[in-house]
Length: 105
Image 1 (spheres, rainbow, N blue to C red):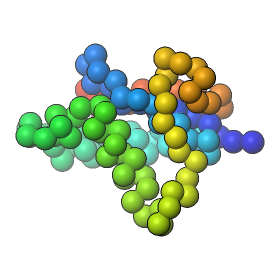
Image 2: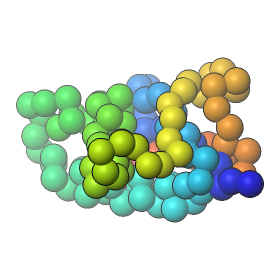
Image 3: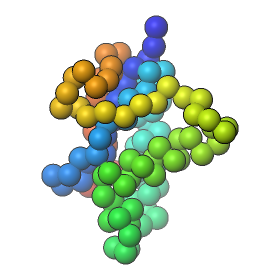
Image 4: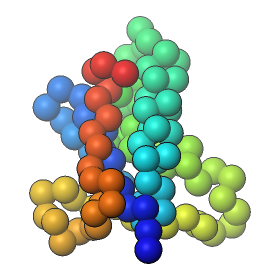
């Protein structure tokens, strides 16, 4: 049994890879939305770095860092990445896929 879910970040026509979590469920989606809201406030008006520009791939890398920063010397979560265009890449059968818009959080 799991609480499978996947998320991706999107801005304009650009979308990150999908992050899958076997146990994360809707809590992962809520955490991603909170993270995106805080990030947008932090980078408002800046355009220097890729994270400042809210590039979805860079945002995903930083979100993963955010999730695992205190996870110990090795990853202790059920996270993995894949591409949504190929359903064989991951399982989000419990909660589906959620796109976190970086344009409107």
